[in-house]
Amino acid sequence: MSGTHTTTPVRIRVGSGAPGDPAGPDAYDVVVGHDLLGELPGLLPGARRVLVVCSAGRPAAGEQVLARLADAGFAVHLAAVPDAEDAKTAQVAASCWALLGQAGFTRSDAVVGVGGGAVTDLAGFVAATWLRGVRVVQLPTTLLAMVDAAVGGKTGINTAEGKNLVGSFHPPVGVLADLVTLATLPRRDLVAGLAEVTKAGFIADPRILELVEGDTAAATAWDSAVLRELVERAIAVKARVVTEDLKESSLREILNYGHTFAHAVEQVEHYRWRHGDAVSVGMIYAAELGRLAGITPAGLVERHRAVAASLGQPVTYPAGRWDDLLAALRRDKKTRGDLLRFVVLADVGRPVRLEGPDPELLVEAYRRVSD
Ligand SMILES: NC(=O)c1ccc[n+]([C@@H]2O[C@H](COP(=O)([O-])OP(=O)(O)OC[C@H]3O[C@@H](n4cnc5c(N)ncnc54)[C@H](O)[C@@H]3O)[C@@H](O)[C@H]2O)c1
Image (tube, rainbow, N blue to C red; front, side):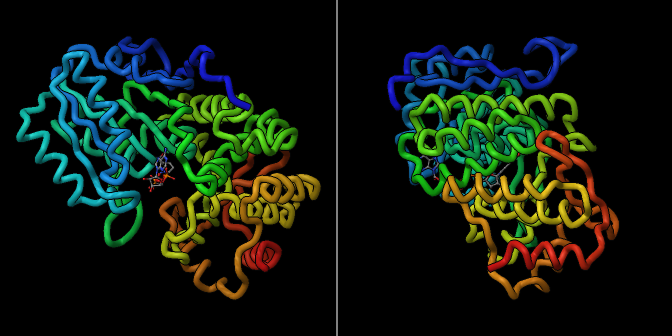
């Protein structure tokens, strides 16, 4: 369905207090809607210089943003960075710092990230580290970045030793989730991003699951009202969780539902699997593990499979890779001490922590998700 472009943007507050309020200095709005660039200049009061970080492979996205900022009177600079994970390196961050230094960026200037989660992670990291922190606005252009990477303030880059090992918490001053940008996103990426949306449904918002189950075609159409509501609801779940737990101590852990196994799959596959695809199988793994531990009802496990299959997401992972997967699980940075930690569900919206499950259950859950 199209024709949703004229609807009013929805604003979802992350953090407490009004933006700029000293009681809630980390508060910001995630705006969801269409053609939102007009909102950008207003998010950067007092800035003179703006560095726009975007992927060199998708120059049009960055140029539009540059033009809008230049029209509004900012001195604009462009960092066109390598695509996807190749952007998240210390070398690329250093090239951005060089641009900031050469252009004389001060504390009151700002960075804008335009792209998928790789670009928003890099832009956030550059902003977090320049002069110990300048403002960043995120303009996510993938579904995954809209509902996850650009929201919550986690920023980071990779090192030779692993993904996201260097980074910092640095909340943006605003996020503009412009659904029009999804028009060019390949379907495979949209479907993968929906795994983070259904995750939000399983851990906190049953309506998300009902919407997907009610109209799968609309859920996978970038310009449908259903997808828009899914995006809003998924962001609202993340916003609620990170507002209560800005630094990932305990509540924020629920956002990792499906991610323990997913991170292991990503490592074993050398990141050739899309994150969302790994999360899809990871949630089914967590559901099976929860069932084996006597926590998750059997019907809910099957609901995971049905939702993922209806969206065209993977529901299995190849057999015969347990040793590699277990080694990867043990390396996960969210492991504390020697205990493997999982989030499992007692029901939709009722996440429970499962720490140090019996190794036999871990293998059996793998058997149940492998083909
Ligand atoms: N900070 C966080 O909390 C957080 C959370 C989840 C994921 N992440 C990070 O996000 C990254 C993954 O993000 P992603 O899935 O967006 O992948 P990505 O940023 O690698 O983008 C995927 C591909 O889509 C292209 N692309 C982006 N927007 C497009 C558009 N509108 N149309 C067509 N192509 C487009 C990109 O150029 C890239 O080739 C990972 O690095 C992950 O670590 C961070």
